[in-house]
Amino acid sequence: FPELVGESLRETFGRSINTSLMVLVMIVALAVFGPASTRLFATILAIGTFFGIYSSIFLASPILVMMEQSQKKEKDDK
Image 1 (tube, one colour):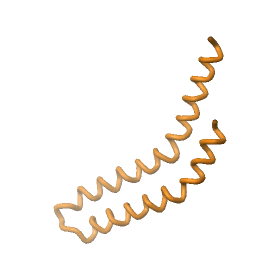
Image 2 (tube, rainbow, N blue to C red):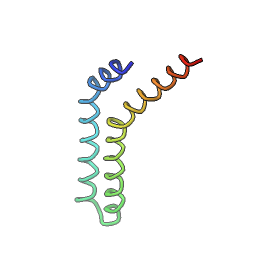
Image 3 (tube, rainbow, N blue to C red):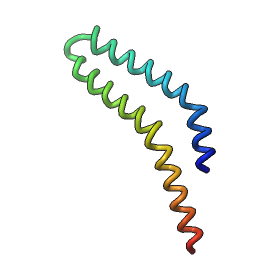
Image 4 (cartoon, helix red, strand yellow):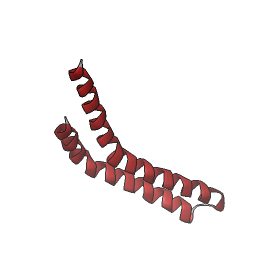
């Protein structure tokens, strides 16, 4: 299972990064070139997008593997 998760992550990593970077470029453009009323919103949106990208790639996969291993261990203990 860990190998499958790692392989899936490698296959989707490039697409995830490209999509996320394009979203961040648009948000930064909105913050820089948009009206003053949207600058704070765009900044907060960029921060949230960054942390969402980070958690989706670097936190969700290891947590999934740990959960699967703990469930497997519980099943083996019974």
